[in-house]
Length: 158
Image (tube, rainbow, N blue to C red; front, top):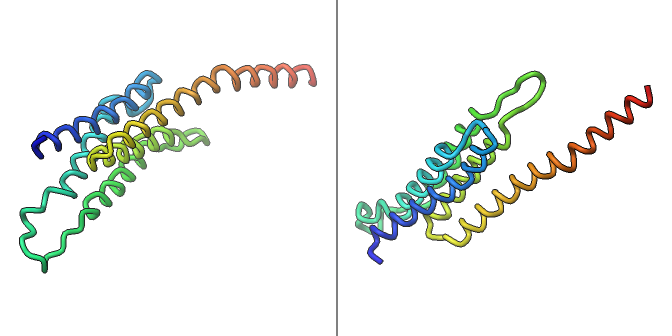
């Protein structure tokens, strides 16, 4: 496969996998949904491709050093900044931590796709979606029933 098509495939997969996480967040009506996670996955994959392959023609002699991790490391910092914007403190409660973590992991998945690690990126996406869905299931089915029992026990003790 020609390099250009391979690079397009990498960013496409990064975007789709980020978008898959975003669909779950969109379905739950969270702050960052499909578009945000899609863009984070796409952008991270693109930065990874640029970091690893974008400067190979610029570096023409062996005296010039090419650090492929330099741009990729800055993606992590940038996502930290975006994630911090999602986290708010309201009425003595912190909100948005899961959304920030979702964006962080979507960036990591995008970077893995950008590096050509498709199976790792896909497995991580499945794990994220399963984790989010499992938490929602437990919260609505198991913990919700316990809250009602705790409230009933509190009322009977008064």
